[in-house]
Length: 343
Ligand code: PMV
Image (cartoon, rainbow, N blue to C red; front, side, top):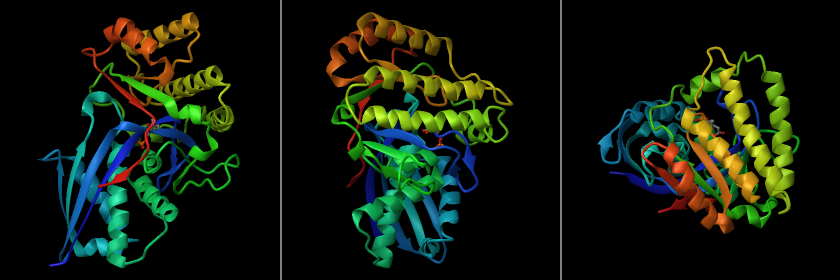
């Protein structure tokens, strides 16, 4: 019996410039920029056994999971370009190194890990070897087809997804690594995830992206986001712009929420606790002069961004003032990570 197996650990990522709105085939309306996290990761093993047609058994943390339906659809779609998928029974086992409730995007690490396994298995089955750059490019493309933000998770450090004249070589098809263009001080950025509310999202990502299709501010959003990503990359080339970097990252996150509030239907995802934390962070920055800010995904949880050298002061601030506004005092302290690992 022919069997193949592959195991990968893939990080989640936090976007500094958000992907919001898509064109058909899961292509982004705008370029986005993120860094991979170090601790928040998904570990996935895919084992294949020859079969008459594709079958799937999916276990998440040892149990059956509704995510199986999404994976089955994903494999079906991929089988058009990777016909070998139809010749195997898939056993997929996956687990996260972080609790579900932290508000960290698990679809990015989940599809990142799965795509890396599939690209690896493709190589084993077809015998076609790629160099590393091509391998990660192909894995990023496969990850994108599962979840757009996952395309950025297959790289360590910083990644950019989406075609832009500001970055030669950028494309909508897969993310590209941009760490080499970023000053080393940005690699000590930390992300303290403050869990304000762990309830299921009010709006799924795919419904959220759809809200951009006829959004009255679509043209203004595209203009603003293209200028933001260019400016951020310029700031990050050297280490003299931390405050300007923070201001722009916050503005971008609040733009995402402003778009959701002004969509039809309208969504207000921030909670009183989110707003309290935002205000306290801004006060702390003013009082201390430290470059500390926030970003927010499509939910109420706040990602506090700070530099590692300021950790002591920031941890004291979190414990003394912010945890009161979180759900059960929960938070997760993460930082820029090195990217995926083959187990
Ligand atoms: O990859 P998706 O479809 O779950 O979209 C992610 C959207 C944001 O997390 C809000 C922004 C981003 O770029 O990660």
